[in-house]
Length: 639
Image (tube, rainbow, N blue to C red):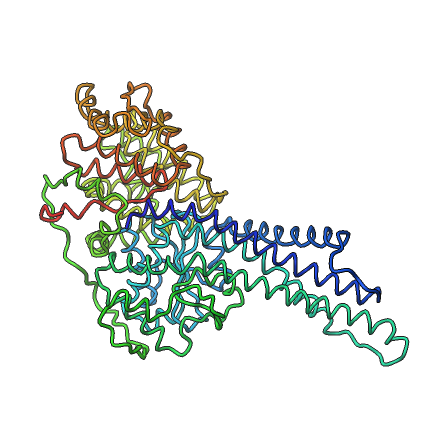
């Protein structure tokens, strides 16, 4: 499975979603018009023709305004990203430093999956009041994604089963399903808002008392009857909206669930884990049902069916079909789950990766696997996380410690220059941060590229917990450290941009960038800028020309782009920054083409070493296209 292609399909699917939404609005408008005709007939006590333009126009306009207003209101709420959805469903944000063993186990699984997938670690929310087994991923981009998990998952699933569920949700993040789900959430709320209004109308009558006198029967009683009809009518119209909402949810969700299950199995290499979770859902009386009233509008986002009734419009395939798709020899029996004891014992994990100083991977082989789910392996995420110093893992869970780790990664090797940086850190971030950054600098610099970025990924959820003043100070200090070098290192710049991107998505939420560029030829100059910067990294003019020739050989005139090596003044950091901003608004397949071109420029000798892989991952993250760590070829030289 190619995630870039899946993202492109998800983007195109939005057009069909819009068509379904318009059909739903048409159905609701028709129902409201008939309700208005009924109310007019009751109040005027005269025959009303079935078609009355004077009644239809205001009824239709009013209904459309209410639906679009509800959708716009929900969209504004969702600007905060996945956290708004999780909090709206009653979720509690888990602290990375939680002492609870089961919560810590869940966070570990999410961290390992994020490292293996090449995306920042999402924040994790726990739905404490939900005893069913279910989960969801929400957000507009990987930078603001969250994973939500019910209490039933923590209490009833083994670690392998948790990995299967989390892998399923990460597939939705990487496939672009998450962004589509968020848009669908806003539109469905607009469709359901009339039911909410009808419920409010009926609720407003709870204290009304109608007297039995004749005057009351002729006046107040009739008025109350009309209000009751309006309330019940809006509720009925709302259920029509529910029907359309379920049609839309079913239309966009069912096939994606099979794909997400398949990806989860590829991530974990353990089909028994995902199958075990599905079997426990089938064997649990509550299954995956959620009790929260907002679960109805978000049911298409869940790991399993989250509602009581499906009416033939299930958003998910049957559990039996999903289990047989990943476990062919299933005996057809669901599993009765019990509450397992979790052993908080000593820290254990897979053995560390074995690398040699000359470890490098075949560049072209790695580039051919860009975006492939087969290239993402949970066990490598587990090993990368496990081999990080335990002291650093703990520091990544503390706001001050996480900042100090990032500062340590950005400190210069030159002693004189680093001395000035440390002094600046002491003045702006405090003596403790400066001392910790300087003490860890050498050890951090010696880390492999994959481990460096894994450590950053672990820091991101903690850094999102900073206050705004802390965030502004951190952003200012990290930018200063990058620009304090006499010659700004491209990787340091990309590292700082990577961190800033994911924190900005949290502290400065904005509308999701729309796709503006769908062909590589539309961004030919920007591709020249970025590929030239990569080709010139650490090379003289002759070596840079040799590196860039790989890009020319691959592309030629293909796609209308004729690659051109630019001079150093034309591919400096300001030009790279502007070019990356434009590629951030490119279609998924265009982003993949850029990454392949950059990889060719970096691996002109046929090898992609640690530094080049480091830079390529940073570029991918900078344009919103996470790719997994290139560690599969670094272990014993195997691919």
